[in-house]
Image 1 (cartoon, rainbow, N blue to C red):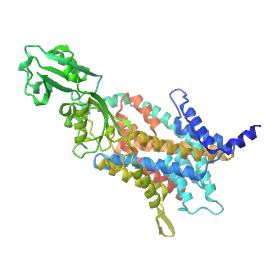
Image 2 (image 1 turned 90 degrees about the vertical axis):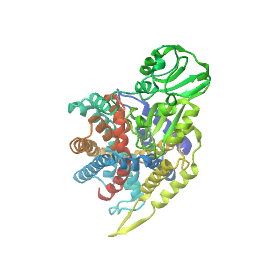
Image 3 (image 1 turned 120 degrees about the vertical axis):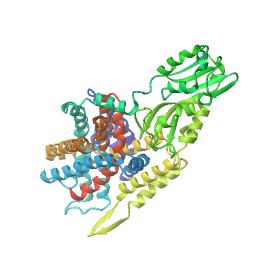
Image 4 (image 1 turned 120 degrees about the horizontal axis):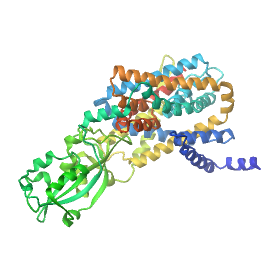
Length: 550
């Protein structure tokens, strides 16, 4: 009866796909103490289980997921990839390269010493670093025929070894990296919270966003009319905005020379600034100032006159009457300080009157709500172009050298993402749409990996499980230690930034969450986004190199 039921559902690919996807998400939500595997690991484990019982996926479906994922990774990295090169990019590039090279050298060494079967070393590298781009590139290099396979080994067998090596080592790669990142600062005597606070104090002289409020005050204090607006601005916290109603006219505070008796001052900002404004007079409800609708919107930074400037220099609240509530970079929250420097592709969540937000968008970038649609033409043709570029190769000393599908798609995504940051009307892919396409593409690809590896993972584990686990541990631990030593001794990173940058170099968002929690700050996210764009490119290249040499 059970076998008949299994045979029935095996013939229903829609059922198989969505059951694995749903169960994978449920498994990903399980929590053991502070650790949670997340949806990628959950779908991988669910795929292994179903693969063990004979379920499979059409290779074309996995190829579509692979294309969506790799192109979206490049698209997300595009604006940051070129922008970081012009700022503090060299340090982040060197750190990402250190982690990637240390991972490759370690994987090649353990593969040779422990005598792994062909392809297994690439899987161990990808699993030990929890790097999906490495796994995708390694399998693509085999399927694309760009590496010479050992005699007696088929492409499908080598791809299977990559998958099983990844699946077995991924567990420690995920949990072990989180454990290392959590324990290493304490073992080294580093107080991440104190280091993050020290860096914040150096950057923003203590002034940070706080709880936001919206108040109106009537100027009734006889001493106030003598106060020039510049004195009011001197007390300004750098975040709040102020408007003044004089009679029936509403003015921006910066357009007036001084306040007069009877003026009504409307302000939105932090509690400290609003408390200071109580010296003006009575707290009132003003219908004139309340007429203009206030909304929350996202503004994407693209204009050259804003890129590279700090929030203090732009004076967004004072100039535009808009409160900057949040700041995100590559989908991660970063510290919102007055000295936070804007980079191309940063997303500011702002609160203020609709007209003021529109004015900000004209000078800083564009407002997301203005164009809700996705440019699927550019997205689809970009993927097609990347796949086409990946087919070209040149022959050097008898070896075929080319980007392959993974490299072609990654480069195409980077180019489209960068052009999008320069020209906002091109290649529009809103953040929620990009997240969905990248997440769904990755999970489809992971599902295929799990189903392929599940068919022989028990046999592989019985035959070589301890060796694979040992190799995976080495590949996880050595790059972290190498990255820390180079980052502290040579590149002189602040420890809070450095641990965030190491997690970015290993593309581990779960580990970043541990670092930010330990630091009690978003400062580590700055380091994460600094290395993440480079890491995705370098680790994609690493997958192909590992297949060739390991």
